[in-house]
Length: 217
Image (cartoon, rainbow, N blue to C red; front, side, top):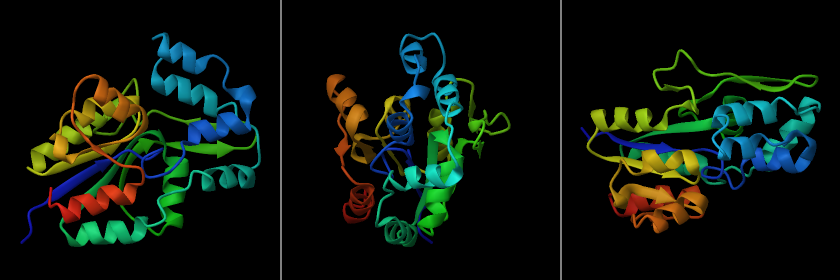
């Protein structure tokens, strides 16, 4: 029987090329307001910033579905997930974003994996209403999903845990795994360089899957 290996992955900007946040702010510039600046200044939480911005969206569902298509989910995701599963890897998405678009993109890609993200529903006249997952075992009042707790749970279940991410909420969980199984791009990669922490760079998520199988990390 193969030893259980676990990969914890961010979604926006990690499994996809673009973040939902960036795309909707570009499409609806009026919704951005000062929420993200307030978050960066420590006045509101990451979750509060995203919730307020997403709630400002006014569009029909078909328009929003076209936007999430523009996120460009990893084109080889189905094959990569299948290969990782065959190699004994369990895959979990841990995201501070909303499961409304995450689950839709995964379903379109015909991929079935664990997802921990903030629940939400979309209404044309109310926006994307994101809620805190208060009943989740990995609840965080600041992010919605406590990625550190997700990784620690994985470490309690396996000696081989990998993490892939790209943004601010990914720094703390990334530091919990060995550098050889720490995959980073964009902001996370730059921050790890600044603090002198090693990592495995990637551009597309398929590179993470390939390295985990090829190098038997």
